[in-house]
Length: 288
Image 1 (cartoon, rainbow, N blue to C red):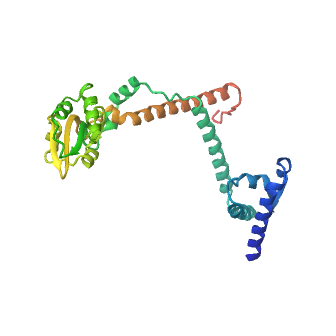
Image 2 (image 1 turned 135 degrees about the vertical axis):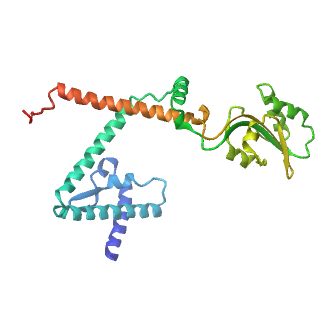
Image 3 (image 1 turned 180 degrees about the vertical axis):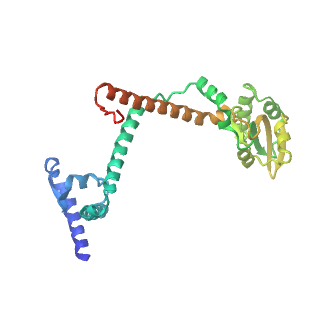
């Protein structure tokens, strides 16, 4: 074992020097190590060693690559030597696996070059409307705007009005006000929160949650040194279809997935039809 290990290290050191010494024209022909009639070429070894590595790190990596290559080919040779001990079903499995890889790669490349990944809003809305059962909510969701600020801040009258209004005019004013006072805020009126996520940010007391979600009045409370002001704009209870904005990414994925399936089915049908038409498929009638 020590002898073989020393050989690997020596080979690695010689190979690293050769990477520098030989020109690009000759490096492709140089053999680093051979095993059972197969060769690891210097060009292949050098291409797997990054230029930025130190000589020590390059030596270690080169050693690992050579040792891994030797082990792989020793095991492969042993497997090939004993392949006759396996049943014929093993060879059949290898052919089936190879065929499956070829077909899968061909189909993926064919689909990738033809599938349209742009999905229009109208398609998303129709899909959401046609298959509401696919998008049932697992928990309550809501659109809400809020900010939190130190309890020492007492100039809140305008902020309360802007938060209650929460429209295209008042929201920019409230955002500017919050920035000037270092308040933490979330003022995107179109964003849907999962209730559990919102409660991690706004520690409001939950009692009769469905009634609370229906309440559109301004909610204000303090927790320690922080004052929270929150207004719920809209809500959707669990077990109902989710809003489109929440389901949008999944809908797009499903639509594209259906396009891929359609392309694949058409491809298979067309190839079979063409093969029959071109006489590449011949079938004898066993029943006649």
